[in-house]
Length: 184
Image (cartoon, one colour):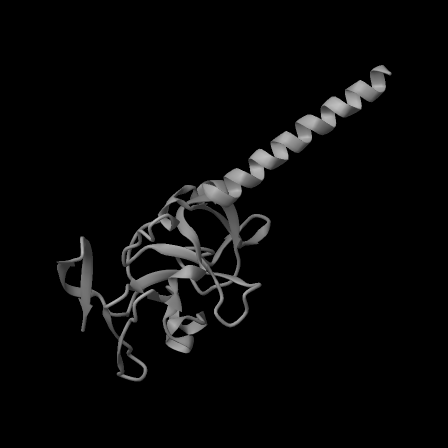
């Protein structure tokens, strides 16, 4: 009888902690592994340690920004791939709805449609991003990357910046209560 009560109490507590954990992960924040070189050197920089190459940063993804889609150029986001919904990708927001984006490879200028954003990786040679498939719907965004939480020597906040060698804002104006950047 005592064993059955003990087992039942452990099951109840495990279930309760599981539900709380899923709720926190779904609504507020989660930890996500970053694989690949598309965001190097921000994530997974080429480095070695005594045990060999170090790869695989883990990041904290906050989800409060999803409530009213509070994003700005330079934010690093996690989103579902528009080509394969099972795949999550991590890229930097370059432009928001209504902004104009110039691409270096094709010299095209594109206006980002409402409800979409333009994303690019920090390492353009290794990145499948908006330069390949165009603007992504903001509904695919899963959250904003705020901190690197692993490995210990890289723990810290993620810097808001633009990829090297890409367009940087030349001027900005206030539009509808948020900053808009023009790209040249």
